Image (cartoon, rainbow over all chains, first blue to last red; front, side):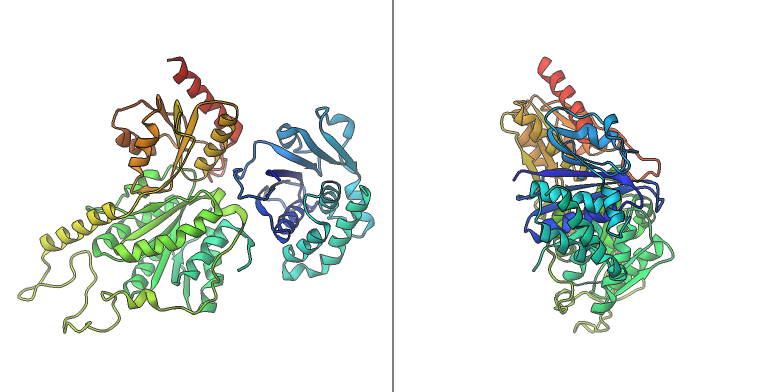
Length: 182
Length: 365
């Protein structure tokens, strides 16, 4: 597998940073190389938040800010334009239809589009802040980027000791995301 | 040992503790702060000491004292804090005291500060510039070894990207028992003994012993000896770098640190499209990998230098090729509003455009 770059973009409170970390941890569980670079504003909720996760079999060449994306996870439309411009012509575009108006988001013909109500599903499983985890679960299930079991293990590795109460609902969000594309 | 997802700052701190660094002092400043936080977390459980000093001046003073006892000690900051430490760094060089300085720069505007320094006297500091978390983990033990071997401060020059990027890396356990090796091999260390000489040990930038038949020091003798040690160190450290695609390159691009990583990626992409371009990424900034740059540039029509500053390392590149081929600057300062060195130009498509424009200019000549 060559380098697979996943760009996540959303706003604070959607679980973007946690989902990116869970994905990175899952890649380690799978024995792969991984790189993770985050950028986010000062606000806890509502500010822009982006993350780049690169997964590969070999040591990673890509710099922290990648030029091209294998997949873009648009969890919120506010800052979608920049990552979208980096999406490869044959890449994967996952849009969170709970908050993204998909008709307004254009993509090249070769792009695989996954339009999923991630935030709604997250709310339904009892973890409204896990929209990005739903998206990551769906991405893993539809592409095999990482094993689903590894993603679930990733939750355990990524959540700090004072957030253990969210392990179960985070795993539920990942499973619900996987079921959306089953 | 298992690989773990670690941010650069955490990995550097763990790597320091793993090679027996037992004293750290610093003052918080982005992007250095997380190193200090991690050392504060990691050192006490292994019997080490981490001090949040009142300022960078005190931080390096504390590290100086710890290092003088023979302990492996380190400090760090970003360029602004390193500016305050310059006098101490130069004095420690002349007093011949090992120290590791973690210099987490904002952009690359402190290349001259790192490689030349702003202290006084005939001193030099080895500088190691990693471009990935994994490379930083490899360079930390080397920095401590060089510092001990040459009895001289050594800098590791990183940046915001290095500190905040996470990678799957393996670091030797920081919890292993201290070997005590660092102290045992330092007969000069101020350990309370006279070392069998019957005379007090002295570690000073003025000399290692007062004159027997008078007060004061023989500075001529001491500075000559310290100078000779500096020259020996400069010649004794093998410079190294990452070189790629230079064999039949028309244009060779030289860049270091994080920028070097972006340049390497862009050069590989351009190569895959058939462009005759190569790269050199110096890892030791002092001593500079002069021979490697000369060799890479030998068949090239031009050399380009990309730095996130107004052009500093370009001096070392020009001193390397000595006019044998043109050396042009294609970088420039790119800053964010906070001044952390995370600028909009630090992006592969933009760096690609600059390299491609320079390549076209060179090939049109």
